[in-house]
Amino acid sequence: MSTQACSLPPPSDEQAYMYVSALEAGHLSVPLNLSLMAANQSDVPIIFPSLAFFLRHLKMPDVKRMAAESLEVGGVPPSSVDLVVLSHLHWDHIGDPSPFTTAEFVLGEGSKQAFVDPGSCHSPVAFSSIRPPEDRLRFVAASHLNVAIGPYPRAMDIFGHADGHINILARTSSDGAWILLGADSAHHPDLITGKMQIACRIDVKTDAVTCAHQYKEVAEENIRRMRSLLAIPRVQVLVAHDIVWYEENKGKEVFLPYTIPPLVECWILSLGVMLG
Image (cartoon, rainbow, N blue to C red):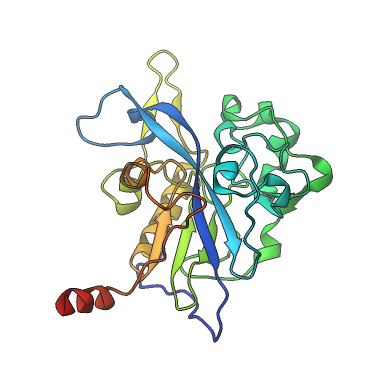
């Protein structure tokens, strides 16, 4: 991958954008050395959050009815949700699709095999037995989103973690702010910044190599692309198990019914400090 600076499309007049809210979706215990490589790390599990995200278009009506779980707390009934994008079919990213009685479900085309026969896939124990309804399921192919954006040669690309893994890149303001929702592209923000590396574990009995990603090299390439996005002003990157972001923001007004605020220009912040 080229190391030259990348950019994202500039805002147009009356630019539409998305309101993005975080959702509590549980926690899971993961051995640190299964997902991260760092100096002097141990086998002691750490508790990662499982974050989901609710995206509402600027021009959508503000729904205030009560429903279930995190959406209920935020005042959005699942029956009002139009589209559910599943990053992939691992158990910690599925949840219960039944309350979404009218939504269309979207998966990457690479998830077809896992949908039909998860036992034949890489790390079959990671897949959920729960399935979204087939009559409201759409698989997105690379040919459907065959355009370049930012550091990605195609908007629909292979992200390394699992076949069909999907990320979302969304505008969050009318004047140039963005957010990348990276799902399982990385399991800790230090992987994105380069402070840590993807870990592999070798089974002492079988010599089998275990990694949190199906395609380690592809996952590393995608992490480098995510890192390049961080170099663009006003771009946020969040992953599903971002323990650092979660610890900094739990209890704050970034979870539904509130939204994650878009980043602002640094010079505006500096000017505000000087004027203050």
